[in-house]
Length: 248
View 1 (spheres, one colour):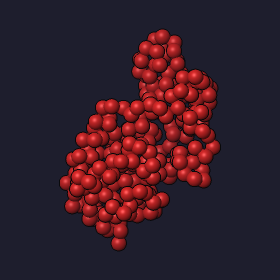
View 2: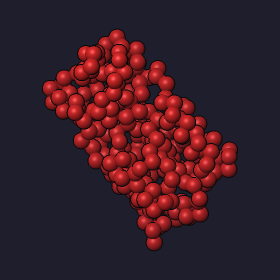
View 3: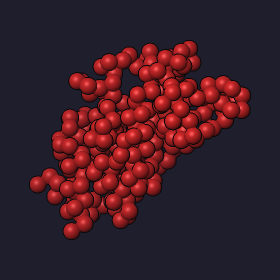
View 4: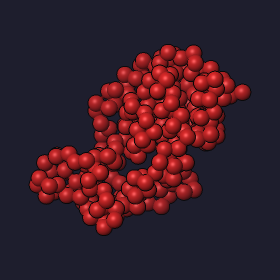
């Protein structure tokens, strides 16, 4: 059975890592961006609302679009998939988590080593003086009153530290990710369609270095044929089942 095989791969690994995408957070009520039926990009042109150019030219429009999504993310709780990965990390089986998500749910679940390649909603940066601010102190006024956050140092608008289209990925985070991929002998891909580069290339890099690959995703990915195990089912059901077998 595939779940047993996946559990065996983890048990035999020395340095297992995980790569997670939007699909791991959809069971927590956070919408996917790219799914064909209800993804956010089915309703919005990302270059008009979520690009760096759009933010610089029309920050009010960005925040108008971002407000309901922010409420959804802030109120979301980790689901069994997040908790399963945190449990694997706690027991020393999973060493690092690479995530494309900005929701912080891995950390809420208790995971410690999380590389957020697409940034985070937990902080904001001033577009003028580059002062950093904790989002917690600003998010309530934004969600409830629609108050756009401004810098208390210079008065300029603040930008969430989530990576927008046209922005580069955070350099130090990416360095840590590349190091993890070089070290791993097992990579779990959970809830990612592997369509966004450069993150999509990471599983290929891992297997070319000799690592085994497990893919748990509702849809097929380009790397499935090279994977040791492919399970096209709900991550919130599959990952806890794998952990349960490992812990037996």
